[in-house]
Length: 80
Image (tube, rainbow, N blue to C red; front, side, top):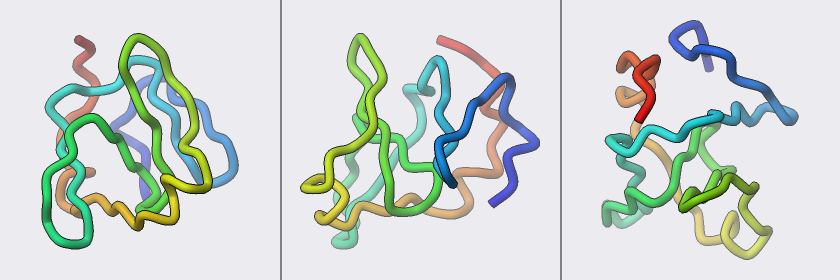
């Protein structure tokens, strides 16, 4: 995964954590159900964002959410 389009991210392992999650990003489950409350930047680990940022729990990771690869090509430098 490339992260050249992110401004000031920090990483935990292979997970890129956005300081200000992008509301327009759409993550879909394996059955293609949209879940915009999740931001998954490495395919299987997630950040849940409401008023704060946290790593996904192991139970959430097991659900198998994934992000469509093309979404990572968008310009994510805009902050909400």
